[in-house]
Image 1 (cartoon, rainbow, N blue to C red):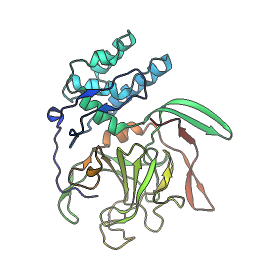
Image 2 (cartoon, one colour):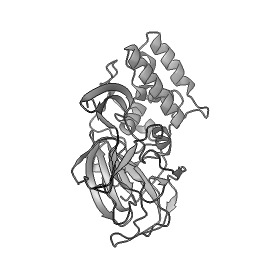
Image 3 (spheres, rainbow, N blue to C red):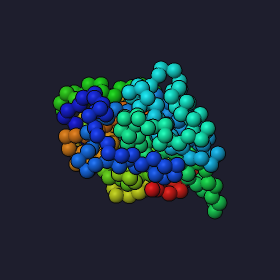
Length: 331
């Protein structure tokens, strides 16, 4: 996936959002915008500790029977301080909002007068999608309904890795360009896990990413790009272009393919998974000049609390998930 122009800019102040749908119903999460309004660029720099803070409040309120959408809390925290979050582990604005909500106020009342709240709600909602919500754990013929984080870290449980925030670093193969993804260094053969449910939109060779997989979320807002997969055995045998994958499925295996016009070539020096996340508000952004790729370093740190355990199928030589979960519903 290529992007010729990259710039760090938040255009919140230049966007006019007509209205926002605020309701205690946890499924009502869409922001209404005028037809001529669209987000052309955004950043996602919410600390992983703040993501966890907002999610914990979401789960707590859900258990109490008064649903509060965690993206609303994140948007409130961002809008209160012009998109900046504190260096300390938690955001005091989010804690304050949670106390007021517990006391009987609603989010519409709290957000009144915060001009940037609709923007951050739409932007963060596009990135985080349905990562928190109801799901069922299947064990034989029994189903246990739960509520919480239903997205997974992109590498399987029990496999070592290292990473750092490398979004925007320079790359030179083909042409000089910024690195629009996040690299997780891991051993060759480490199982790569689907972050969330979606459809396999791309699968095969790319001269930059080598063997790669592109998965589009069910709501079509997120495109996950998993690249530099293993030579000779890059993909899980059950994977097919156009097929549906669930959060936690094994997609393929870490390798170091890419930087070559010839297929199945290891021209990457260190084995790693390149994880990219493209946000799509308008279909013309998918492959056009207004692509939006966001930094997923903090998101990967947040998701590291939820890793899928796997086991090897000796007959197929593929690894399989050991826990089956299904999202209860999509809006």
